Image (tube, rainbow, N blue to C red):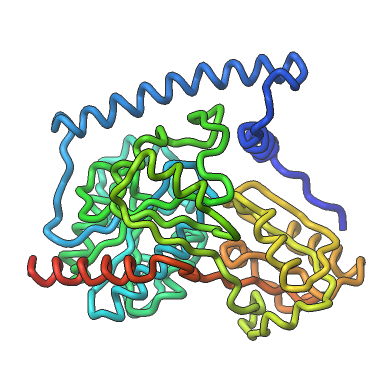
Length: 393
């Protein structure tokens, strides 16, 4: 079977992402690329001005922030993708639920299947938020709810997951209809419409601020100086000495608690049967990979660190929606190479179509946050959330 070609939009997206992540001098590029980078640089100044103006409107009260009378923990970042928000969101939700809080995660549901934009704009009907999980059961699939909300709902029994572009509406629904007293705002650092109680910010220790430019020339969604708004900073992907990154963070924020952590593999699972394999199964095995995430190299290297020999990697754009031919091509290619398994990420696995049989093992790597330092700070934050919540009630 021949590989189905990627769409032109995805190829362009992948190319631009690779281009803006490069840190070398623009002068090293051919003239055409230098011209494109110059255009992107100009657009980044426009984007920076718009971001600053928008925050000024919220800061002065011209644009209103809506309080909901419960604890709202915002988890986000200042860069575009790749910091590992989902596992951090999961550890907050799991820990707070264990402490007796009734937790709901509010998500935009990025790239989920929705009605066309023109229907959403012109329809007069105000739809209720989409409940991916009511805390008792998962109610929709990954296509309808979005891959990250579905993954969180599947891994967090007892935690509600509600999806809507308007997260004030989603939060009100979670409080009034689902009885939630603690809201976690996924990817919430830029979402100022909902008033935040605690601002949690993630910084990738391996690539804190990219090349220092705003989108679309760099990966910054807002200036690095906005780190000053954070109450707690999770320094993710900490491998080795990160003191230089900590010092850089302290230039912008010298009061926030800093928690150093790493995204650590926990277990391998069969994509369809959910049969578990210990991580030691990878040692000495020949594997292929299939992924559509922001930072595929980190995933592929984690397999190598576990002893696997990675011989072929198939990458798609972040949040790519797989069709059956793409997955079947990767499975057949893995079998033809003679590899032991095709390995993917948990986020990708929820987007795979179902197959009754497979020519080779198809596994996903389950990742969880491992706190390396600052665990006391995290425990204090959890206690503070629970105490404030009980006082409010």
